[in-house]
Image 1: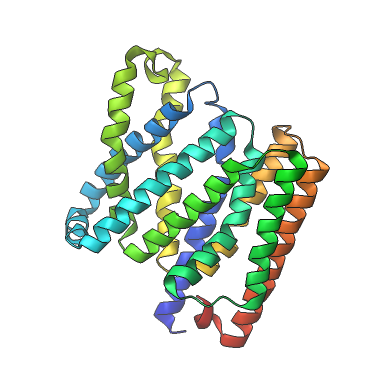
Image 2: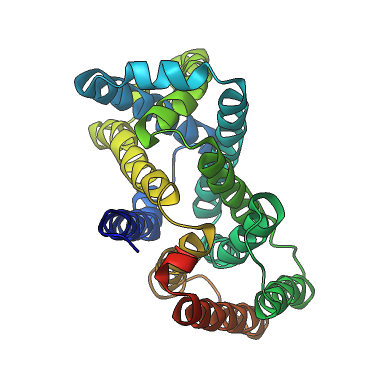
Length: 301
């Protein structure tokens, strides 16, 4: 790997670590807003994130970058798709916290690395080795076991895993500078979000809630924006396989919070299901590491 490529790889990995740590602790922040309706929180995330990005885009003089990118119809279509999937991901995460299912959110983010590997194979032509195939099958079996053992299909987990995997895929394919792409995505959502909040009128938490509520809702802008920018900066610099590897941090933190802090149940069925997924991730990690040693870092990242 050349010096410049090495620098880009390190920057991508550092960005990913920062993003996944932020997301890992995000349920704690959302718990402070548990009394606010889910859709209202998602709307505030989009609106305040866009407001912050407008300031950043203006200060950094990046509007021409976005304008030039949107002249390409393929890029425009890809960003439209990424907007849809990040919206679904936000909705799933906020819903999980609201109904005391942070454990399910962690399951979704545990599955997501393998979803990312599969999407990299299916759409980007990235190599999928036998052990990786086995890991994906094992993870699917883990989800099925939880469905039958607990009696409820973990739809939030599946929604989070697939929506975030597709978001990463479309952003990587679009290859648009992170801040410009995110400005477009939140710019599409902001008018809808603002319209909904105006329709609610004085019934919104920011209008009728406490001063703390108002501050927490406004801060959803930077808290949403910063890790997303870090994530996209990583996605543009490393392969989806590496993205998946780094994502272990987020679900690990979320699972610990769910069980040890929020007191969510962790039954035998959950233990069996999570164990199968952890084994799948261990096999995938071992295969990834073996590939890096065989082919060199440049072959994987």
